[in-house]
Image (cartoon, rainbow, N blue to C red):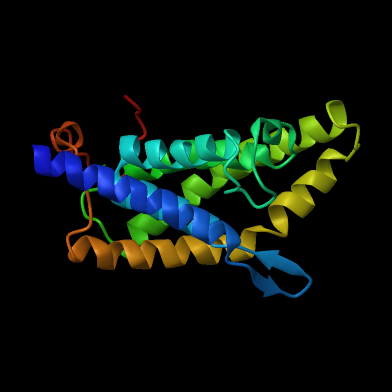
Length: 200
């Protein structure tokens, strides 16, 4: 039990570091620049499970809010006023979702994990775009139409983020085969056929 707790602690710390590094790995695509932050939040949920995946992502956000410059534009408590902060909050729920439902499939495969990742991506987009729209229009006085927020923050971002979903699914399958896949006892006790539509 102690060894398992140590392993959980090490993996959580590893993913906090990976998410931080991924934030600053910038990949230019046309006129836009993308990072690997989303890839590592997906993997955190898939490999660590719902609870630990969400804890790792939340710990990363907490580090940024107390002033450690782990976010793309720095850090500090005022970061909650950034229009893009909603995406960070979405990552926490996305990690929980991916960790939970990746362990509620009959057989873990690339296809099932990709479906789980796409569900996690939808969660991030829902929270992120909603936060962006509300804060832009009612907090920082930078009005933007809802359709424009959906187009620029969702539709244009979806193709590269989908590729990250694909990459995360492929990596997770390989890492699971290598033994890097935590199995909470509470999850193992309740298998389901396919992805369950019910949440505990």
